[in-house]
Structure formats: C-alpha cells, structure tokens
Image (cartoon, rainbow, N blue to C red; front, side, top):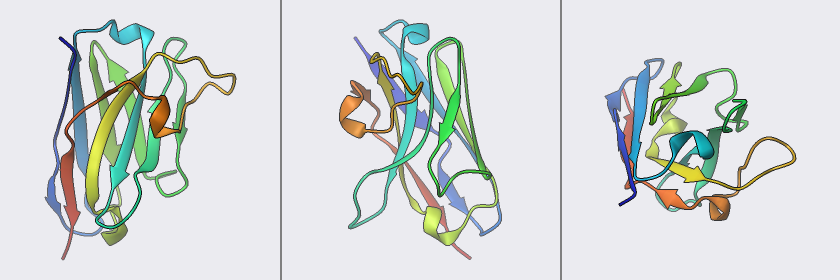
Length: 125
C-alpha cells in the first residue's frame, strides 16, 4: 500500500523557516522523482520544487528559488523553507512520479502518481 505523508507545517512569522518532511512507503523510493507543490485558497496548485531520481538533480519554481531547498534520503524527502513570506501561505503537498523527463525535472502535477494529503503552512505576523 502506497503512503505519502507530509509533516512539519505550522504557523511561522515572516522571515522565519520551516522544514517539511515527506515520508513514503509502498514503492521503490529511488525509482521515483519527488515533487513539492502548494495550493493557496482560491488558487491553482503551484509547482514549488522537485528532485529527480538518481542521479539526483533539483529544480525550483520561481517563487521558491533561492529560499527553498529540496533533499531526499531513504524514503523521505524534505523541503527546507527559509525567508518565508506571507505569500508562501498554502497547503503544501508532496508527490511522487516515475516518469522520465528529458529536462531532468517534472513540474506538471498531472505527471505525478502518488500524493500526500498536504500540510498547512501559514506565514503571519
């Protein structure tokens, strides 16, 4: 049974940091690309970051570049978020995809097979 479970969300002040974790089971982790997406109320799901299967390479969406860092190890993926802004408030989702991409990264939500339930991140003063 496939499981994807996000954790680490919460309330943080602007400029603060959070580290999200994505714990997976039920599939061969090293065979899958891992992506992070977010969705704010009334908005479409937005690509945040992804890391490909081995050889691992990271890719970031425009809003997260320079502030967020993705990593993965032993069936768990992480998203370190620094310098958080009010606009980062959203539900953050982790997803896994076994697709191949010539670019080395997959940003389309429809290309991901397994999704977690999400974890709420609220940035507020």
